[in-house]
Image (cartoon, rainbow, N blue to C red):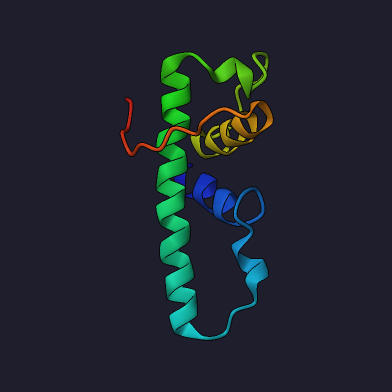
Length: 94
């Protein structure tokens, strides 16, 4: 199940990596590295949001179907809308 979430987050539901149409292997490598660093950061941000109890700001209570990645992305959008600072941390909350 985790691999399906990963592909969904990296492809159509998140970064849309396949839309780059890059052909140079070095550029693809650098882009993939940057995307996965951002991916790990967004997962840690999403888990921070859930652990702090802020999930209700970005997710519907009746359907808890968002991944931690999606919660992290939505939290950034929430912070931009309210002109709040975005927490930058790489801590995982289990």
